[in-house]
Length: 287
Image (cartoon, rainbow, N blue to C red; front, side, top):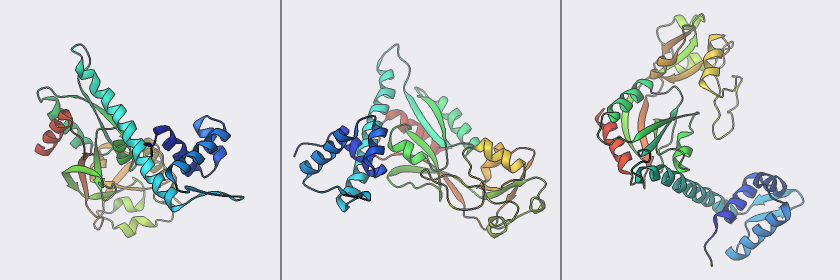
């Protein structure tokens, strides 16, 4: 059997995610008949049925589920190879830009730690240029897998470190961020139960994997939107203690006595052989 082509994987993943040939063809910018033909040819080459087709639509077989997971990983790896190679290529030319690393982190998170890390690494001989890439809740892993980032600051228990190497950098408690005028803002401490069901102040909801969890709280897209809604008395949020760095005068932070500690890690792909990245990790471990 010939090796799978990137094009074939891209076609199949689109159909498997959309579960509709028409929508997948539109997403890929192609006509539906050649897409259907390509998937049928792929099934013949693999010798398995990937999709169940009936009047109600399309669904995945067991083999199709496996190829969807493996295909996503393969496409991410291909994209990562291209992106990281291009970033490293600039350092090969004497007149080109120096090597560059992209560091992803949740917007507004670990500000003081990040500044210490950037300052310490910049003082190292032959330090690479660091591009900071703010991202949304729990997006760091995806950015590492597809090569948009080389390294990330990640926070357990919120982020999964599966598939990555990591170094632990900092442990901190959690706080409730409330409107300054709310009665609970006068408390010295609160519990998770105190803030999980406030009738007039539902907790904000962040998307994970493109969907919002159920609940009455507002759907939040970025930190600025969250900060404004808290200041207006429309929502509350739970964050690591380091989030105090971005609070407004209209906010109050109250420590949570029973929230699990948040551990900040610097994480990177386990297969990485970048010398520049190794230097950044050594600097982070010394902080």
